[in-house]
Length: 90
Image (tube, rainbow, N blue to C red; front, side, top):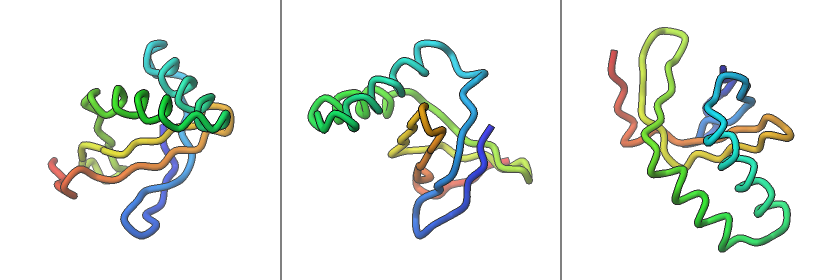
């Protein structure tokens, strides 16, 4: 479940990870730990792993879009992402 708003070319807001697979939650936690620890090369590696997972967002109006540049911070429930090529499909 997301609660996001478009800010420039990114969607930003909050996310609920309760239904997310444990492996995905783990990647998000590792990403956050590395960002917070300022280990940006390790964070980049994890971000690359996340980017390889085909994830899409479903908007309230039923439109769906693939996401890219996804950043999730589980401890604060913050999320941000861009739409891949801004292509929406029903």
